[in-house]
Length: 330
Image 1: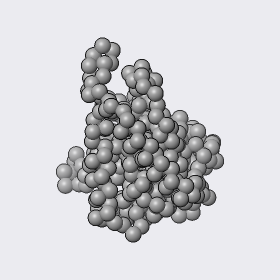
Image 2: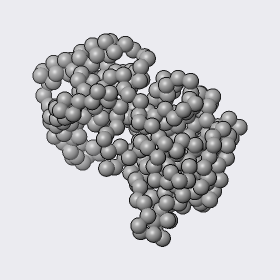
Image 3: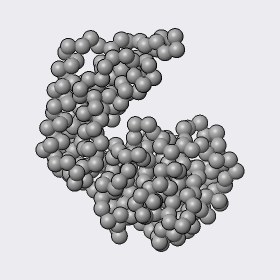
């Protein structure tokens, strides 16, 4: 299954999701793992992914006064970045540091002239500045797994997000824990209709705002739209406790859903096509309008059939939890 999103690691005396300015990197939080001694790793995403992660990681090290390691995974490859006090932000591309034409969107673009040896040296320097106990053997194996597989087709084949978590293990966390439990389930009622990925009302509101900004849509924003965007931020910030009280978030989600359905009843559906630069194109808002209710209903039915006592964003086949591929190199 394709993976797109940011994997972010830092050290803090609070839950990462409460750190200031985190939303500039990502706010659609998926899983948070507490590694020990304040170190945490968060999987998150945002509306305008990928973020300029090199700039954001460097800024975050200052905001949080802590070392920060981040990777934006784009299906088959990733850009990784590390920042710490007194150390210039380092960056590199995986699995091939030289692949400037990887075909995936990265911000900033992949720099020319880099090698895996250069990247390895930068990571070693970052880990030292971060005060981590690095396994250089595991780091080298994780960085070069692609070359190893080319030499031995029986070697491990890992997805790009799994490679990033192998780097996390090399930083001195050889056995990754299960994710921290959510304070509430964002994928269940009443939140799913508002903040459920591409089908949620918050995403629909952001998309409509982008269309209006580009002149491709000339209607007025409905009252529920700004509220849906605000709830998405607030609910994710409270996903692991703290922030707005759950009862308040629940009431807001219910109001947004009711306001949306009331507006939908009195408004014709979006057109099936829109004119962009004089060309008729399929209107994604109409696709979402038609499909979102059934997609969210299917999600809710699945949740009720497979109810988890302590939802945490993972699944029974989660490959990240545990010792990984090379426990002997810890």
